[in-house]
Image (tube, rainbow, N blue to C red; front, top):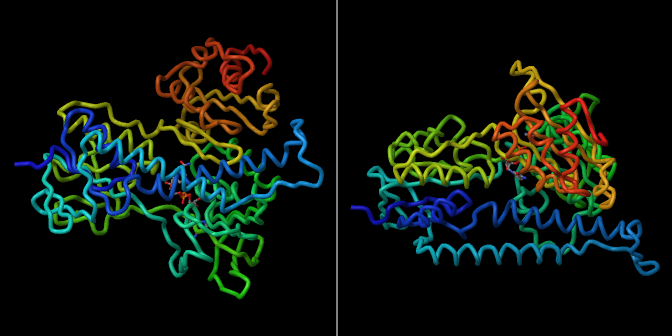
Length: 466
Ligand code: NAD
């Protein structure tokens, strides 16, 4: 006898998407969550971080208002208002949390508060109560990785969990960001734009987004950050931090020698780890791999125990909320006895919400060449795009990687609204469109998207403005 059709362990994007989608298909669902539904994405990650990035954007825009023909009163300089930015951010998070809670209620999802663990007989135990489902979906999520020996005190040394939840009444004046990946780059962008003295310390040879995007687009972001004032060190080894009365001293080594900086705050953003230590995996016969991820068959999202599924950050697929949403649909469809198409991980959309934004899907040029593909590559700078000029944001690039005479393999963007423009390329890559298919489609004028059309047309050997 099952109490529910599906029991979901964890209420982040993977968990709530599983619950909502299963309920929409008429299944009865229990959702176990130890804190608030919404998880890292809503409470400590995507949403608050993007709200802070937006505050930085407004400050940047107002600071340049004069160039756009809007005069500030004589002698008036705009200033960041950190408490106001944080309270707006908190308001958005609260509103989304309320909306999500209401939606779960309307779909008749039973939300159970507490820490859930899988049991040997395939149930989920929460505070002495056993929830039985025909299927269980584990969505245990992830937590920031720590640097061994570096204590995170939440004040001087913080992770993104604390930075996104800051209730500090003022911005730090000097920040060191350890790790130039997605989180490091986004926070470096926020702090730099808000006039915080920002130093980015990255272990790998490229200081900004060393893994993931095509170098051509990542380099545009790196150049923009540098131009705006971020100090970037690549190939950096950070030493033992030293607390002083004024802040924290961060010693580091690069191929150019040893150095140290004193800052008010250190943000550690060196990646995230799955939270799978205490979910009862061993008891339930759910295999965990050496890195701590739940092992799944990505064709169905089923774990080594039939009937138990796992999705989202606790499995080793890209740690993105929208990937968790897609995996939730695969798991639930499979529970419903269907044969869903699996997520094509090599072609999911990636977006870094820095200024300028970076977005991509599919293969980078280097990946395509390393895979032995004969490729044709065309790029189009945003510099000549009328809409970009009107916005005053001409730092940008469209880059398309296609098989020679064949379909589009990779689509790479940097520049204004890359996050939104990406989805045209996403469709093209996933539908295996030819550049000529997209090049013949009409792009509105004036628009940023015209740069995409222009790039596709260039594959024909002819061009309009490009
Ligand atoms: P990440 O893996 O993107 O980047 C971590 C970076 O830290 C890497 O460049 C790595 O080389 C570097 N690093 C590791 N150890 C180091 C050390 N000791 N010293 C200096 N550098 C070091 O991880 P993240 O930025 O922490 O993000 C974590 C996860 O959150 C990712 O899975 C990411 O996909 C997700 N996320 C996504 C978005 C988005 O999609 N916009 C935003 C935030 C977070």
